[in-house]
Length: 538
Image (cartoon, rainbow, N blue to C red):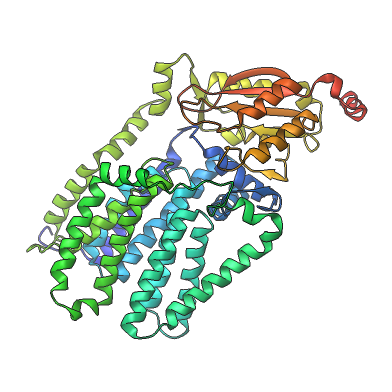
C-alpha cells in the first residue's frame, strides 16, 4: 500500500475533507465581539429590511460585500452567527475557486493538494468573520477563474459567457472595495492583453471590456441621482487619498519578507524558463501561471497600506507563491506516493503550527484568548450574551451587557412604539435595532467614521438635528484616540451634551477596554403632546 501513489480522486476527496474542516470549524466556537463587525451586521440588516444603498443610506464604497450576508440573514435570521455561516460559504467558494484556477493552469494534482492546504492554513483560518477586505478578494478570484476559463478552455458561445461572468465578478470586486477591485481589473486586463497578443486578436479583450462597462452602467447609473459621485470614494474631495508613497516604502522595504522571497524565487524560475525563448512565451499556461502569481504577490505588497484592516489581510499570497515554487521544483521523487506525501504533509502542517495551536487553545479554554487577556488586564468580566438573540454565542463584558439592559429599560424605549422610535445609533451595538425593534434611520450615512464615511458637512448636519431634538434616543460611542481619532465624530457628542439629557455610560464592545458608550435621551420638556399621549396609552 505505502509504495502506491494516491490517486487524483483520493487527493480531491482528501482536499475537500480538509477544506471542510477549516471552513466549518468557526461554527463550533463562541467568539468575542470583533472590531468593525457592527458594519457587517448593519449593512446586511438594512438590505434584509429592504433598504437600498445610496437611496436610503450612503456609503463610501459599493454594496457588493453585504449581498451574501444579507442573503444569509434572510435564511437564518439577522444574527451575528448568521454572518459566520455566511463566511463558511464564502470560504468554501474561495477554496474551490483557488484549486480550480490552479487546475486550469495545468498544475499537478499533488501540487494543488498541498497548495490548498497552505491556502486553508494561511488564509481561510484567519477569516471566520466576513469583512469586505476579504470578500473582495474572493470576488476577484472568481473573476480570474472565469476569465481563465474563457482563455484556456472554453469554446464557442461558452467563451463569451465566461468572459461576461469574469467581467461581472471583476466589476463586483470593484463595487465591493475600490483598491483591490481596481487591482483585480488590472490583473484580468493583463491576462487578456497577453492573450490578445498571442492570438493576434483583441475580440476577447474587447468583449470583456464591453461587458465590464455594461455591468458598471447597470449598477451605477441608477444611483447617480442619489449623490453617488459624492459618496463613492474615487479620490475626490472631501475624500482623502491613501496613496502616500512613504507608507508604501515603509511596508515594502521595511517588511514584506515572504512576499519578496517568493518574488525572488519565481523570477529565477521564469528567467530559467525564458531561455526557451518564444516557446515559453507561447505557452499560455506557463506564462499565465507566472503572471498571476507575480501579480497576486504584487497586490499583497500594496493592500496592507490601502486596506490595513484586518491585519494579515494580504496572506492569500502564500498559497500562490508556494504553488508556483512547488510546481517548478525539479524533484526526483513522486510526492503522491504515501511516504513522501506523509512527510511533506507533516512539514507543511508544521510550517503553520501557530494557526491550529491557537485553535487548540480555544477548544480547551472556556473563553477566547482576547477575552481572557482582557479579564487579566482589566477589571471587567466577560460572559456570553445569551439573553440577546442577535448576539448569542458572543462574549461581551458584563458591564456592556448591563448597559444594554439599561437601554432596554429606558422609559423612551419601553413606552414608545418601536416603529416610531427615532434612534441615532453612533456605536458598535448596531444590532440593538433588532433587539429593540426600531428601524435604522434613512437619508443618512450608514456609519460615522469622520473623514472616511462622513465629513464636516455631515457632522454639522447631525448637530443641527440634535439641536432640533429630532431623535428620541441617541447612543454614542467615544473611541479612544489611542486607537483612532474621530471614529465617531466627537463634535456630535459635544452637541448632545448641550441639547440632550445624559443618562449613563458603559464599556464599549471593543478591545482594548478604553472606549465607552454614552446614552442620551430627549429632554422631558421637549416631548410633544402626541409623545405624551402615546406614552400615556402605553
